[in-house]
Image 1 (spheres, rainbow, N blue to C red):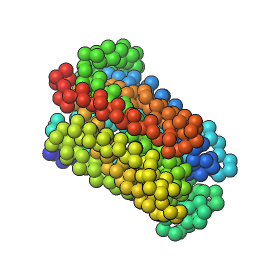
Image 2 (tube, helix red, strand yellow):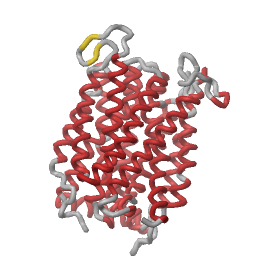
Image 3 (tube, helix red, strand yellow):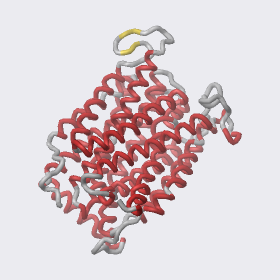
Length: 447
């Protein structure tokens, strides 16, 4: 492989490294449980979080396929990535204003939604670059390595956050027992709130290799963006009309729609669930996150190798089964009992059991997501790769409201965070059943 090709691959890896902290720090392990503390109720936080993320997913679902169609017709993705990167940074930075006692919930959820949507859109465009990075036999390994590299970036950012900035709400000290750096005030939770600016700065810094090293080849027949925008809706209608004839692609979009929604539900609510059910602090959830991200990096890399050897479908199936089992197990972990066995007050067994579940979620989630994007590449028309990843985002977001809104609704109706997790089990099983109709190398996929 030529040096320039290696550099291009490494530049592509850096998007995962740069963007992963939005998932690791904000969506799961630091900001989500901090919101639970601010709102004073695990149930209330879980409901608000569900509604906010569900609405963001709806916006992404509407716009992703159209933006993909525009990019394919205009023959470029970089301009879009610059715009989404700006919104990512602005949205993440806005979370600094989640001040205890005077939080503007509308502003905070709007900032979070803008940053999250920008991250989702940027991911569509970078994923669509995957088939140009190597041969058909290589891209499974490349995808796994990129996902693992991204997890390592999230892990490093989480370590820095826990060790140097995020303070315990009671002690005012970080995980290593020091006051937050830079004179940040623990009483105002400035160390924890700094997670927003840190995520923004991290992204801006580590996207530099991406923009310097990744180049797109000229696309024959490309048209100006304005013309591409006018033609996007007819092109999209044409693609949607052709879906029934492409059985494997249709089945895969439906399958991934359900299992990715369930996985995202686990990521979104893991921290809030642990804070509400087990009484964990932000620091406790952060330690849980370290373990989950570490296993995620390792098994994304292993999964990439398994993908290269066995193909993406068995990798996806095994990990969906593991995640469904974890969803069942989590329901039976509480401060008073573990898997039906009562535990003494103050026992560490519930914490140990939940740490084990976190390790499994990280491991299965990393391998699953890496194999999933490779599976889509195998289903897609190369001339409409970005549009197809837009449809993939639509499939993931068209029902993305189901997991968060159903968790929010069931939690609110039952008053139980444990009962609120149960919809995830059904979603994983639906995805597994539909996967049986998916062919790793479908005959109807264009050469």
